Length: 162
Image 1: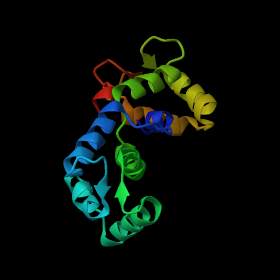
Image 2 (image 1 turned 60 degrees about the vertical axis):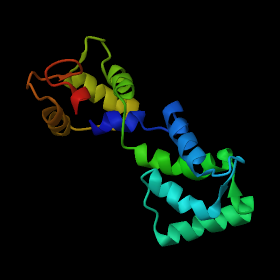
Image 3 (image 1 turned 180 degrees about the horizontal axis):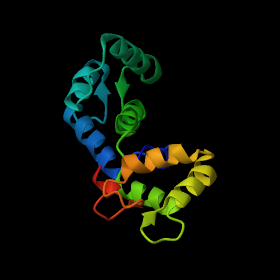
């Protein structure tokens, strides 16, 4: 599965639901509804969102807020500050849509299965990796749960369920 994840992990923008989460947290800590969060409230805001910054990180963040934004952040600044942290946290989470897209790139004949030959070709053309037969068989053995010699997307050894 790791090579499918590799294909789909690209630089990306925040998703609408991630922006909604940021907006919700921002509103909660914009106590006077003036469109700004004070630097003193950033640590609590981050903790509310599930981030546990170290003291050193907080010092850096607070310095950035004080120097760059005069001690207060508006929503855009808040997204600039928290967006990369949110993206880093979700970088290992790959959605079904991304996995299906990567799978289709390897499934050259479109039959819903990746054979060892398709795996070999895909690894070479898509990832620039020329693997030996033993390495390909090892990858296939790790992913092919029903042992039919193929990687199935919607079959009994569905990679989507991993």
